[in-house]
Length: 173
Image 1 (tube, rainbow, N blue to C red):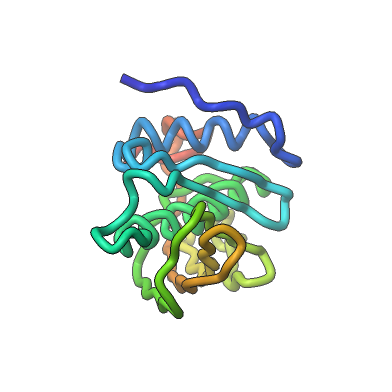
Image 2: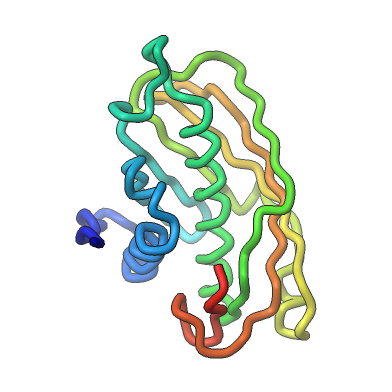
């Protein structure tokens, strides 16, 4: 069962795409819904996700490292998905390599921030039918206090036509 997406009225840029992305996560990555992952903001430059503290804590009453890693992974994946939409490209996004550095235990309302300024790679290769490699950094906060930095390398494979995520998308995810 797919629950309706919570209001995304405060999204500054492409709220309709953010609603589609969040719904796709819930449908194709059920863990995201169980964790309560929500898109908080997309400006065209920054992409911010959040999740509730409750249900994502460890026995020490700080946030569970696995939940934070998952939130960061989805945040990076989501920004790439939105960038593909902005450029009218499609493809299958795959996390190829990642690591995270925790500077301290994180507590409070978690959120993850991906900024285009912390991204490198060439998505335009997809238009030529070639795979693209994107490296990205995602910062993780508890309330407003920084607590971890995720670095991920994503591979985007060229699209096969008529996938579920968008026209020109790929049905394999």
